[in-house]
Amino acid sequence: MTQSSAPSAGVDDRLPLRTKLAFGIGSAAESIALYSVSAFGLLFYNQVLGVPAHLAGLAISASLFLDALSDPIVGSWSDRTRSKLGRRHPYMYAAPIPIALSVYAIFNPPAGMDQTGLLIWFGVSVIMLRQAMTFFHTPHLALGAELSTQYIERSKVMAYNSFFAWAGAAFVTTIALRIFFPSTPEFPRGVLNPEPWPIFALAMAVAALVILFSSAWFTRDRIPFLPPPAKDEPGFSPAAFIKDVGRALTNANYAWLLVAYFFLSLMLGLRESLRMYTNTFYWGLNSEQLSLFIIGSFIGYASAFLIAPRLHGRVDKRRAMIASCFIYALIPPIPIVLGLMGWLTPDNPMLLPILITFAGIGNLTVSILQISVMSALADIADENELKHGVRQEGVLYSTRALAAKMDQAIGAALGGFVITAIQFPIKATPGEIAPAILNKLAFADGVLAAIPGLIAVIFYAQYKINRGKYEETRAALNARKAAAAPAPAE
Image (tube, rainbow, N blue to C red; front, side, top):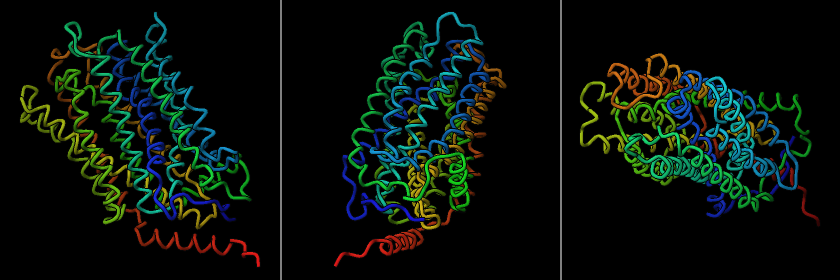
């Protein structure tokens, strides 16, 4: 079984800047839709609408579990799709409208609902969002992996992916805190104001819709250069899906990355669930102060955008993954640990610069980690093509997403249970919460969440593809394609 031949984008020349930008903005739109929910959904339903935190967390978890199960199916389906629009773009065109409608629905439950009704509305609408996003996210990541066969160019493509993912989240944070939820005399913590949520949701939905369509439209010119399914590869079926997943999971390097990402995502899910609570209630920051975190995050992600491809030219991706994961687990929580020790307090005039600085370090390292892993998955796709004769970017990226989302689901549920277990009050008033409760919140965010991140470091160390191994694999693939090419006519 051999892969059908097609002109290969990026084999001899670097990809056009236009292509990398068009691919990257798709990640911005994904972040706008998903970060709106992950950053504000639990807070909105718990603190604004009064739904118990552990139940709202379970609703988010349910959506992640179901989404995780659909990811590999969409990945396999995408890998085996034959159409005039290639393997990826049919799904990227179909997804934006359902995504936008779901974002709007999440923050606009019908008036008069009781807690049970609100919980059901939240769960169903988040499930709809994540299912719709799968049809864009999985093909979009697979598209990024197959845009280039070059070792460093792949890292550059994924650097655009990481940077624009940050840009989307930064856009949500800035717009939300500066425009929709500013501090007012009635609501010093603007995110607790119930009035602006519908218009905020509409703005995020429209922004996601426009940018998602733009990413699909402005990458369509690469379709002729992308690898099609193998000529003798059958279409999607349950049996084909099982075969695809089996091929992916038998790759030892891929398996180690999955296990590592499982633990990393547990840390990410827990931190993301608790971050807004910690900043709002433990540190006592208002909306305007929270919006300034964009400074540290911009410096972190912009630095990673520039550093990661150059780093991969000097250091194998494996070492970059190990170092960045280790730093990300330990450095960002330092201010919280100092707070628990009494050495950093909310009235410290340097509090905000300190928090922004450590957040910037965290953003730098997690971005380098993301770029390294995403680029490494494209190298694993080469290994699988050499072994099985087919390219499986869709399955490889989607199965990784499955592990991540199932673990983020655990993290989101754990975050909700932490809020409930420490008896954090519903519709709490900043400044009126018992110090013991705030310390328990900080411990969970700063100390407990770091443990799975350190475990992830151990498994990233098991990844074995280096630059030399990559070059051997590419040479073997090129030799196979040259041997299979028809002889020139005499």
